[in-house]
Image 1 (cartoon, rainbow, N blue to C red):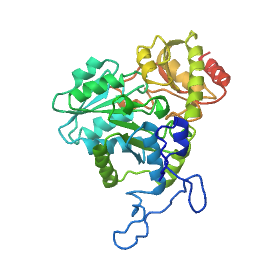
Image 2 (cartoon, rainbow, N blue to C red):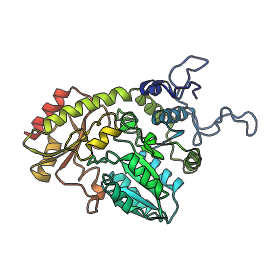
Image 3 (tube, rainbow, N blue to C red):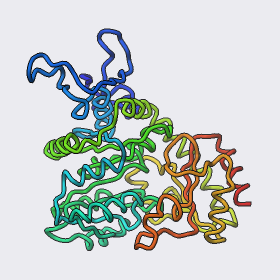
Image 4 (tube, rainbow, N blue to C red):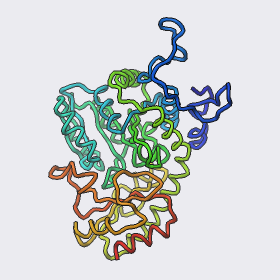
Length: 386
């Protein structure tokens, strides 16, 4: 929907101006919410602008999808009703029964549940691998069977860092595709396609939307053939983003760069506090030089993000008590919104991996550090840990 060539423009400019030209009739600078299911045709098969039915395409969704592609440096973007809808559609588009997938050994619980409880029943087995160890990823690949290597970096919730370029080489040598879940980093902090990934996925519910008011997912690819296959399955399966959801996500993307800078600033302040607190054992943040993936993160990320995890010295009961005691940090699932959230992964977002090889430590607390006044965040954690 935009004819301007912004390929050489900066991230912030692309976030604001990609995907849509001001309306030629009214001059509106923001895309309308096209709340319509169908479109009048100029004769049988005579589509106006390529639109016939809003499952297949909707102008508001097109604006979002074009912006997503521009921000990830991809050939084409696709918007879905949720991150898991994007993941399921991608899997159906690129895999067939009998193929194999390599997953992170600390993958997001919802992703693990999808592959373990749904895709595996469809005939798609999976194997876990430590994505911080390129050799471990290579060892998990089954020659002639592995179709996708699925990478989160940073992972959720242990913030493990995978070397995108190195893992892309390993995957491609084995004839597999590399899919990178870029939700934690966001397209502002990390560009997986430029590092060799074939596909990027997002839960746009998180940093892309950024205001905890919309659920959505996205896929961005750099290959035209992959785009055709995903586009067919997006339409055939139909788990698309509605026009209002697309509009909210598009609005969020316009301020993504500004928000991510503040998320990172505040996370660094919180990390400085946690590392010196006697009730805190291990602080997990890629920006710390003690983090095993620090050098890789420094190489492939602009900054280190707004997600922080830590383990308390008093075990699970203390972790639960800290989660219950904060006032500025809201106890809740999800992440990436302007407000700070605190959660206990073992009992909340990652309950689905309990008792499996992906089970997370029971004394782990995960923070999504928002954009509030940093002194208030530190004071809140001090009270909860005190």
